[in-house]
Image 1: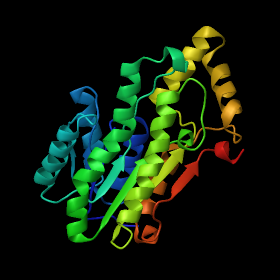
Image 2: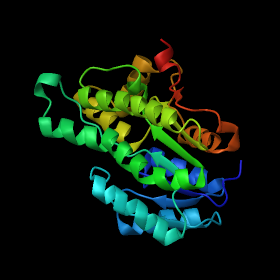
Image 3: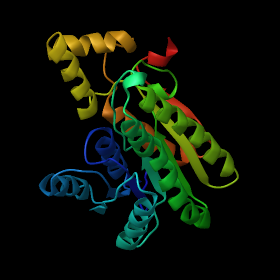
Image 4: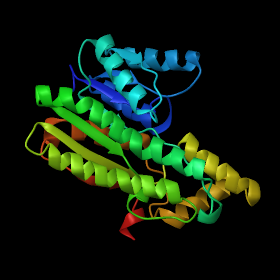
Length: 260
């Protein structure tokens, strides 16, 4: 499944799921525009590992919660690489947990912007070029929480449900073109975000390992975390010609979480 000659932009790709997806796309031959946060030394190390796969890779910094900055960032990527972004993976996200009545309004608004509105901003910015060349792949990273809910996560659950609705709308609007739009809904993946949640729980009760096991038992029948490499492989598949008629779909990769 060669993606050589394509330019992929993955938001939130300096760590966790986003970095894993960027690595898989580079393995398939795509050039990479990565985006996110981190020390310059770490970002340069990531770029070096991607370039070692014989692809072009650059860091494009922009605030995903700001529509104008997203548009500017995507234009900048086009200028740097001399080609338009034709693979977009909307992955950036944050989390905050609290009972609804205590949930800070500013935190709710921030999560909606970063986890959902950012997808719209980026899709809006890449669609003109994708339509001009009649080819594009848009993949939104939603969550098991895009299909089912958990207590104390009102903003995250609302945002991830919204991402699935957005995915279907874009898929319908591009149905007669060479552009596809789909979503992936991971269950628990041992990312820095999830590790923080586990450590928070462990501080209140048990050890990290005990809380990790309990977290999986609560939601994920497989009893194991979803592997980042598996998510990357799914993204590559959806970007390939084999995914040309997969449109508006959402793929659960959650160890059976949403099958219950």
